[in-house]
Length: 195
Image 1 (cartoon, rainbow, N blue to C red):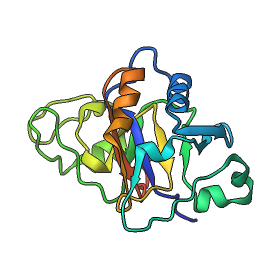
Image 2 (cartoon, helix red, strand yellow; image 1 turned 90 degrees about the vertical axis):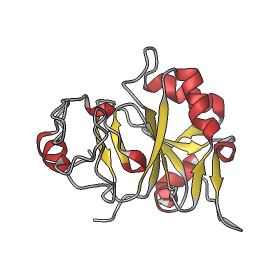
Image 3 (cartoon, helix red, strand yellow; image 1 turned 90 degrees about the horizontal axis):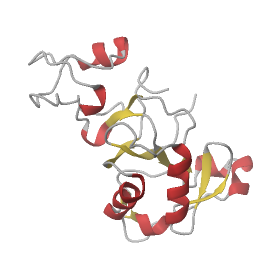
Image 4 (tube, helix red, strand yellow; image 1 turned 30 degrees about the horizontal axis):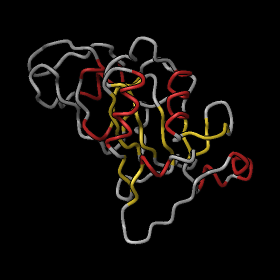
């Protein structure tokens, strides 16, 4: 089984803001020009403003942007960048296999026993092994390696060593959808954590 391509995840820091559902997120991303034509129900071609919000590092990056007609030939999923906005928006753990353990939102210590609660129990309010506080899963701090996500957009085909999202991307989404938004990279999804 092949590993899915890397992706940059953009999601609300907390539960989706009131009035911001999947349809609204797609509308906002289309207005920004990040999203173009539908490839299928969950995938969208990169729009005309895509390069305004993603910076490519290096002296001569090769950028392949997926077009709607490329999906059937397989070019989209293998080489090009496209945007995946899943219809399923129930909150779940989305974490990279190389992610550092999360920090407790109360005491800010790393929870060494996180896999038992997060992967086995899928606790909605994990209990910190240090301070004993149960906190909503969305408040735990994962840094750049994961998060508790529901509504989100995944910009597929972006490597963390080669690309950087502009601060303007998160600000523009937050301004239109409300709430705080953040990004993280998913390169090697952790078994058992990701749907």
